[in-house]
Image 1 (cartoon, rainbow, N blue to C red):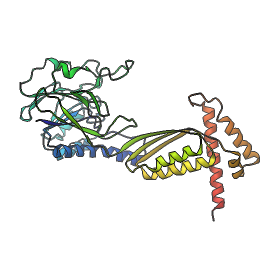
Image 2 (image 1 turned 90 degrees about the horizontal axis):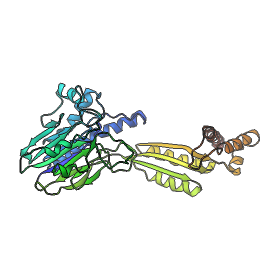
Image 3 (image 1 turned 180 degrees about the horizontal axis):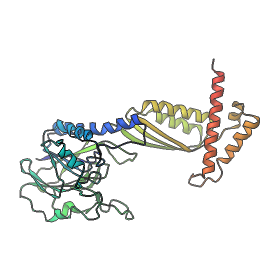
Image 4 (image 1 turned 135 degrees about the vertical axis):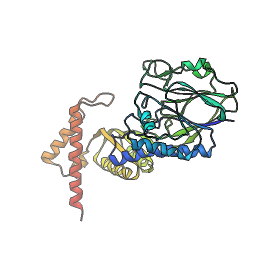
Length: 383
């Protein structure tokens, strides 16, 4: 019974410029580590081939060192690797693939399908119908030729493509690289291995997106897997199992704060974060000064515990109570300034919580002033 490991969207060479350099470097390194994990899993599960459905590289201009390092990660599996280019690494006349071949980085067990065609893997019991992208965007279905492709009897027909299955996105979205939703049925495929969608997703009983093996964005769509695919014989339905491959867990947390218990609940969530977490925190609502201090302390502890935490407090209003202002000894002029800023940050707020620039500036100024006063008070009280 032929067995495959289906993976895609490695995005090797991706730059995480939105993160600090040290965090970005570790997240990029995790993508290479995920490939080594795939090789290990392929050996452990004794698969007959690894199907890589595009976007092996994140861009055409990755360095030669990165190309060599990528192919070195494949050493843990000696069987055939079948790769097609995707939209990020399309098979242009001069591309990352031509560079890889020119520098001699491609091992002999790696089969690059840089043009459409049928690849014969009779020894492993299948033929592969490959639909690589030869340009970044196309609006024709490059898998259409699968329907009429002739293959030897007795061998599995495995499709390999990179693009968007029609009908999965909203009708208003004009998606490039379309793939017919019924391609597996029309082309008599035993399995259609797809790339482009970064989450693990089943399209029909014979068509799957494996998703990226290492999460790379704050979207809850099941990244971090490869698919083990068992097919007993031509015409039999594939049996698909998800195998975990990801190291980091990207999570988006959002909360609207109104009372002190909301801060306590959020602090509990942050306290449960793990070293492998990459967190995005979006906060709205309002807090008093004491709650803000507790919130900042919880964020600080979480930042030290996780791989990365980015917190957006721009929609969170600081509403100092009379007790807060009194505790800051902000009477007279400072007290008047705080009161004016507190009022100004609420001006023009829309029902959806968006605020004009002037209100945002007032909120930031109030936050900064109150924080400085609070720190000054704490320093004065320290022994």
